[in-house]
Image (cartoon, rainbow, N blue to C red; front, side, top):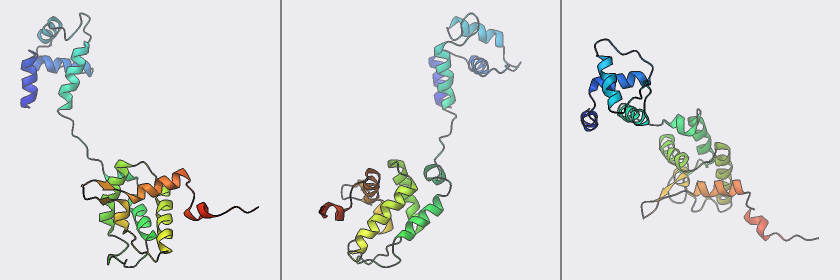
Length: 195
């Protein structure tokens, strides 16, 4: 509130004038407790209104600026970020991983709530859909299945893992790129075409 009054003082505008300006911008009839004609006269003389009672550019900007103080910033929900059925999608993703302990001593599947936080980060930083995520995850699991899951990441660390420099890396994003780019499988690279 303090900032609003400072702005009014800075621009030499009375609260009544601001109210009338707001009403004019939003096509509202001002209340009779405010002397509208006096406020309009003041607004015209200070170039907030034109002679034909139209808002000037500076008045439109000023009213929007004041309005911005009253807008609440809405925190995006998981549903907003990942889609309506995100919880089912996360569960499906987690079930792609084997239900076993890895060589690291950690279980391959991670708690769903922990995965939700990871996927919030993932969807805010990358633009892949669930279909690509599933395909990328299956490709990753297939590669490590051949190696008996040796050094495979958990479902959480596959989404994102914090590096020593506090940045995050995502193997999932790398595999999603591979799926989207249609990069060949490792086996295909070494196959010879015999005619």
